[in-house]
Image (tube, rainbow, N blue to C red; front, side):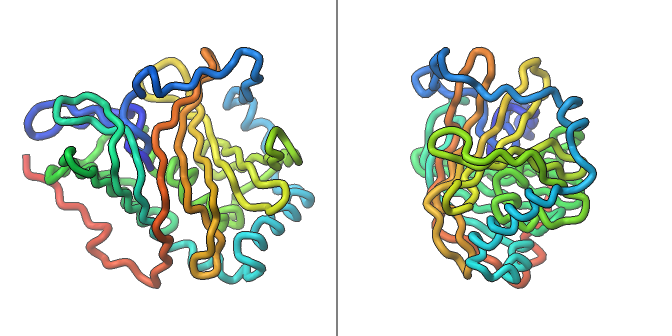
Length: 303
């Protein structure tokens, strides 16, 4: 989840429309922060959603299943039983992201990020901007409902597409990197392509029921997950974007090798532009036996 590209306008009690994108960064970066890809570089142009759906097999092919077993062994350090604890997880990080300042202008800010998630239907993402910006933002998703809090003002989201975005992007940035999801009923992995690009990455696609197709890239040597991306259609805009989460600098946390560097970027095919929206350094991953019940409780601000 990122404070991200505009998904909807959240009307605060003051009557001011604060445009926030759910799980990425708000709005667009300043022009100097954008990276225009050279025209000679081939952009991976993904297929239309309807065509992609038609390519999904009925089940994960044996060769792909064997490869994923290697990836699971790498992440769990040959202790696959550790995967069960990943269903209840929390990650705390510090870094930079684009946030609106007091005048509503988007600026790169130092911030802290705290994400707690309990599979499959509880998510809490909290951002705390560092001085001079005094901004706290919290997104809470529980069983198909979504609440957004800016500082002390909380409101429920009502737009279905906005609500649905929460679990879709949490899969990309949090649950898929923990890999337990690929063993869930109904999940199909397919289209394994070894040693693609530089540095070499093994790429495959994953279809999760009621979600878009995700592209996963693994290090060809270590089998550790390096990237998750998927296509996203922003509300009210015509051009789809590719949302990209990159993972690096893996370290052990309670037996699991997990990333301590997480970068979120968005890509356009035409013109070929890639923008980094967030850059996080993870302080720790946690796997509590239980979460406090109040962590996933919403308290709406009276109108």
